[in-house]
Image 1 (cartoon, helix red, strand yellow):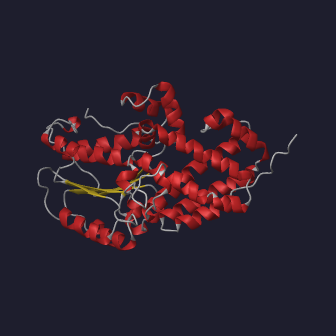
Image 2: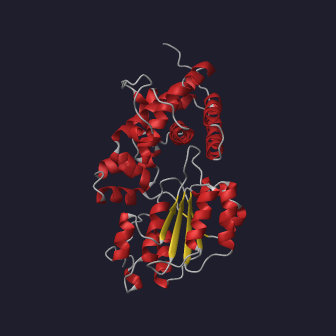
Length: 376
């Protein structure tokens, strides 16, 4: 069998294997699922299988031929990658038009041209309409893979012209095995990372490589728990610190450093002790920060609801067990359930260009309040 890198998604991977062995890929494939769950890895596995030069289709991708080596080094002429660009983090019309021009040409080295559109939910409307023209009249020997965290932001006409696969969270055992296979964590630490990552391999690997991200997540969770008893002014006053810490978490989770995102120097040219407090995040970074904070917030709200029911074994944030158990009895499960829905809805709004600071203000004010503990 060919060597695929996807782990924990047996049915989607079986589909990819069938496509590779038959040599008849769909002209367009839409992969949906949570961020960092493995959509890009599966898309690259499909590309590797379609572009591999091994004589036996069952041995593709062989990872040894010249095509496989070019894919590994990111310079295969028949693989085209599209991703959000610029401060707004969009995929724009010009990018799609350039891709359409490339796909109209015959493959240079392999049997197909393959395009992978990462974070396809960031295609703006003009770009989607341009892509639709290509999907309606697809060039021969091409396969376009759209990888989207949420397909609701895509036009129905775009979605209807794609084969579709949904990737869900990976089972804990598979994720622990992946971390051990990569030498990223042993079984004990792997189990903790699997819980924190919510079954998302990409996030688990990122957290394994950046222990400080785990510390930041715990700090954000503690702040959110403490804000249950805060008045509206204290909540709004906490926004700036939450946004800064969440921006640092987002960078670590994506594997980028602050220096890569923007120069670390303080405004007066000196390097201060806390550069993350001295820089202004770009719009895309602020959007990513709120998305990262919402992900932590979701874990906190879920764990509070579970702790209120006594389901301690199911908690994600087990390092915060004492804080969760103390706050849970004063938490209304109905209010927490409604807040979880708000997190999901406003998370989608941020991804659809809602102002991230305003969204954060709304969430801080709507975060359910609990009465303070009376002194004995």
